[in-house]
Image (spheres, rainbow, N blue to C red):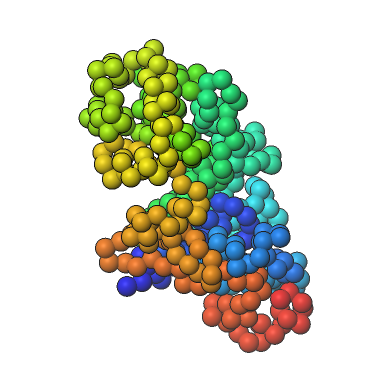
Length: 380
């Protein structure tokens, strides 16, 4: 079986970060995604060898100069064959290139136009530069990450960029594609990483409204304040993560650690958490991380060894699930989620920007004479 998006055609105007991640997700699910890059650019991420540009996997790539005669027109011909287009530029850039959503839908009324930005297409900050940390900061999420006696932690760029950005754009595009089947009309998907970051924190905003979460960092149920939801250093300097929130799991954790459960009551009293945590700090330092993993992993004590990148790849559960795959000698996360009939898979490793230019143009409907004219005009 092919992936569940087999048959859909997508144009990716190549950028960096969340937009390529969105395109990778769609390609993993079976959509035919072509990368359109600026002529003369060998790779989207400078200093990174193409084979390691994991976010570029699964797609053919073409390079074109939109400012040369025929360049823009060639892309618009591709648009007539596409179901969706992805772009991750600042608001107005695609319009200045003559490839904005209104122009594109004049050539294809069913086109879904996916726009990926940090701040969104509208609002006071729409035209301002930024990165994951900025979008996470404005959403309220960054303030909540870290210890009470320290500044907010600098997280990896997976929450705003990839989760709140690329993942939600992919979701929005698929939603719009489904709607287009009913309406026979395309539409624009305005995905902002600030919006997405806030959305990912929906549960916590609910807790805050109910008075169950405070603005004080490191003083709440799931931010490291509680002894049953934190990380602990072990005898070898490695760490274990504990998430024994429910009473029955909390009781099992204490039993496995050889502790008296009556000493850890009431479990939900924040005033007691520092005392309870101090006890667990001492206990976990008596054995190595892997010793604790042997005792706790696979039980309902909700405790797991904190693995580095290499250890995660080698872990038996990840091996059994085939969570990671090797493509062209590069180990990387496999497509997810899994389906009962469809088979998402990586169809090809990343390729150079201009590797498939003529083949894409031909396959998507340009004639040999049109391609020859583009070459003569040095557009390709």
